[in-house]
Length: 226
Length: 302
Image 1 (tube, chains in turn blue, cyan):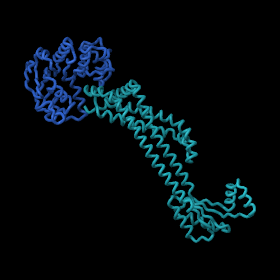
Image 2 (cartoon, each protein chain N blue to C red):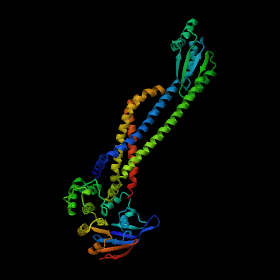
Image 3 (tube, rainbow over the protein chains, first blue to last red):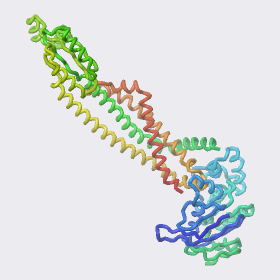
């Protein structure tokens, strides 16, 4: 489903972010990408979202070379990939409902469909009573759940979470991780980038370990070892 | 789906326009400046063209005939002149008419009037006033008259005016060039300020744009509202500029007419109201949409 073929990314001529990375993600897998800050996790995700171009190698999503697509085709790929970030990236002047609805509006869905889907997905993340709250009126954990709802509402094939718990306390962290597990059980591929040892050791799923931009370990039931 | 998106683009544009109230007002005011410059440029051109046309109308060749020249002889010359392709129009002024015009012009001068009365007879000859089709054709008309061997002809009057007209034309051309450059430079400065104001407004929305992109919004879905918003700014700015031109031309019109002659800017404004507004609107919307287009391009790269 996702295939990185010997991908390298070098910023500004000599700053190597990732080097010679190859791996495959199968449908409905739950993959954690771990590594210290600066090990290349975020670059990996940016490459998959076509935010950055690789210096060498190719990235395939559903057998499409992501970086060979024209600019007008990229949005269609992104609608199949839900993204969750450490800093939530919600629109501050929109309510929880509007933030989620916005993703559907952008992909051109009809109003009736939006009115039906958004409450449903907000219910899934446990925020059906907070629909009309603005981001600043919600806790960090709640904001991240709105972001997850937004990532899910387009019924994506993959959810990518880049340090989703980086700004959260342990309790909220576990809620978010549980939610990602639930999403995975419902049939969506999940890619989780994190440097949180406890999370990785508890999940007990596939772990790809990055170090200085290279894959040093790829284990089916991995642990966090650096 | 396309219809739904289009509706959303328009709706988002109006929402942004309204929510960014102060930024919208600032942008509009700066754009008003740019549009005023463009409008002034148009006004300036109108003024100078009218002046030039006025001056050109005053250029003619006068063929003065001797006092004793017969009308048949004069008409013969007129007939020959009419056969020339360079000649557009010939006005015949008879001896009596020439005297009447002369008297009218000097009616306040007692000395001249009494001198004429004393003379008893008409000292003036008949005149043919000839206007050529083109400025450069006057020379050949004059040459034709001077070399034609017309005995009845007293003198041909063109040379003494020629130098003055030439100089006036040069002055007008220079004024036009200088005025055009000054207004164009000011207009360009105003355009840059408007452009940067819009860029700044869009800069504040860059986070929103990047989020839109990451949830899979197409380029045009993101850019559309900004372009429509730019067009709205241009629309309101051109209306304001139009309203400013009303009292401005009302005040300036008669004064400019006194100085340049020719047209009254206010009557130009009222007569060409829609055309003028359309021109300003075009300038305003172009600035708004173009600036938004360029400003969003940067943030749409992801």
